[in-house]
Length: 156
Image (cartoon, rainbow, N blue to C red):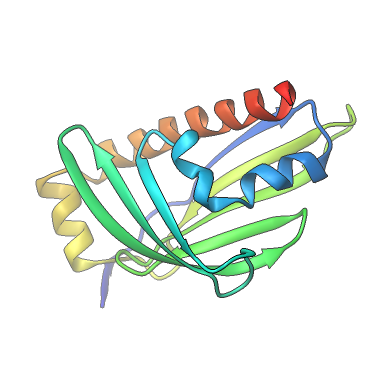
């Protein structure tokens, strides 16, 4: 049951690396804790990662720690990977496009096409500082995540 529709959150970055190299990073969801300020650990159930792959994430925000269950719902190699969070119904994705400079533009999105669950709404409002504040925090986290992915892709 959903009770709150949320706007799309989206951040993009240009990376001076070919799409195949960037894809190798963003599609290895088990490595997300290296880049995301919220993800402590991701346990991937089965390899290689593909459509239908399930994961358990351990997330944190300050002293708060919580698990989420996710499933890859879109998978187009070197173009897009998206996973749905079972616990709050959101979909997180990375989309890759070649850019005019010869590198790769990566866009990270958080969609909530079906809204979020009532329990997620309550926890966000009561524990995580409110919907608007938490959305801003997620957007900042995306910028941080993309910046770290960029640094890794350009360093290797």
